[in-house]
Image 1 (tube, rainbow, N blue to C red):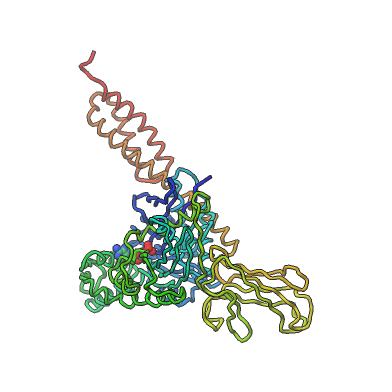
Image 2: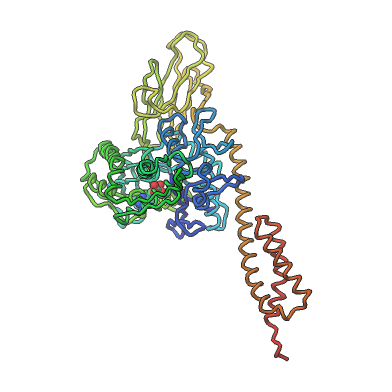
Length: 606
Ligand code: AMP
């Protein structure tokens, strides 16, 4: 049976893990690091770069480098959060035909699902190289507070990447799985998972008891994370620069990208030290010449810049405690998850909220992926005695006359779950009923997130109020919603025409899968070319060395031939064509044998 990987698809970084010898392990990326930047770039030459390669070229290609895509997935372009994000990123965020947020470089448009799929494909390849086998199945994590559109979009991203997404798992639940398998003893324990990542904040309260992981409550903010911390530093730096030079660095995409990198670096340094030095030479050109930016940021000043962001995590923590019916004294351990929890002010705030020292035994960057791998082990049957009881973060319901929202499934309901409700008609001989499905907590329907509209068609003619149409809402273990309808009078299942308000159509997904496959082919070609190049480079260096030493033992025509092959190799190395590289390698292999024989030749031997 092939292996199933666990993937933490983060806003800033992603991690892939797998079960090995009964325990979860993080698979190192090609560069050896355990995390892969969730960045995808499209170069002017049409190449696609993913992960650290994309990150490395970001400063020179700000418009074609997409980061923090998780903030856009499953959202409309006119979502106020997306609008806010579009003011702070150097790339363009556009609207698709159905109003979904898309990203754009030149005249090429990509859905966030396709961009996330590129990251997932990259992680899939890392997993395949590590395990030596094809990977088709995955468990992918999402913030607990993700709504249905965001979950569906993440699942679609997996499909585009050629992955069968066996489970969409909540990040805090994944973290608690990893924690649960690490700790000794099976005594009952109530824990809080405080997860502040690059783009989202989640707080979950769980009860762990004898292999049962029960989520008691969850709350959060899907638009609060490390990216906002970076923005505060960027705004401060840009303000200082404007005051000093009169230049608005935010208006220049290249300068903005450089400010972003410097801001994140300074923020991370301030987790370890009291002062960070920020140097950005030649940030802009002014009539007086080049303008440089040089500043020091103290930890205290940084804390003033971000205090309100950290404070915003308090409300959801209190809310989750309240929903779980617990007080802070009843929380026995607090797990810190997500890179942003390394900021001392965040840790201090967590200490204040829960009045206890947070647990330091888990690695905040890796624990979610490790938990996803454990869940993969459960699905594969390798890990037994684990039961997950997760909850839905948001209420689900329909719009009724007058624009009110009627809840059918309350937030906090344990998933999977199913609820039904009977609807009827408001006019005589009405053959069609439109049901508008929404998710959220507001009483006004339009203030909630619209998930789908259902037309129940073909209702037999009858006086108003007579037909009884039972609509069933289901939330599966992935937190994904589906709806079905049945005419109680006839007992027949009604035809349901589903028009999702967000997300890709099956046709768009198919097209994206085709494109992703061609990119995967291109990626494989590029990897193959770079390996052949490395081999050729190494062999050329040793051959040139031997040649310098033993050329005198060769005839002049042989020397000319060999020099010719060396030139051919150098020409091949200046390009990326695999066939040319192979041809050069073949010819060089022949020569290196001759040179090796010469090296063994001893003129003093009989
Ligand atoms: P995650 O989504 O868990 O990968 O979290 C990534 C976020 O954590 C990004 O905003 C990073 O800038 C931030 N981060 C990573 N390391 C540190 C650090 N040492 N101090 C503060 N923030 C960090």
